[in-house]
Amino acid sequence: MRVRWTRRAERSLAAIADFIALDNPQAAHETISRIRRAAESLLLSPKLGRPGRVEGTRELVVTPNYILPYRIKGGEVQILHVFHARRRWPGSF
Image (cartoon, rainbow, N blue to C red; front, side):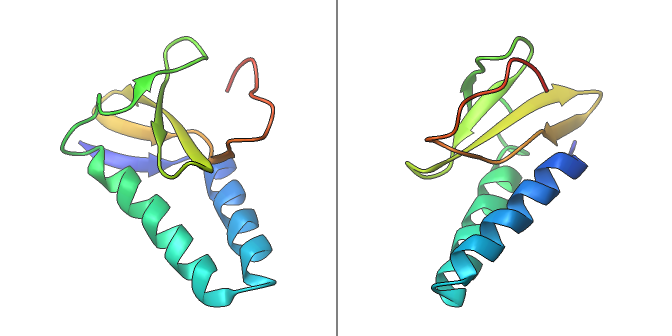
């Protein structure tokens, strides 16, 4: 099993890092590291996250502010996006 980040997830992670770094580069680094470690933890427990709001997905709450929607498919944990908890949730990925 491996973790694979979709392009969309990588873009959202980069945008989060850029936004936080405007005020605090160290906090940006720590936040991104925490999100990446949380994703890697899914290798040991792929069903750690709750059932997702979008069918066929699961959601891992990383911090009160960030949620990783993901799916388990073909020996991969696919990270679909990184969402701020206040954002409107999409109907599909």
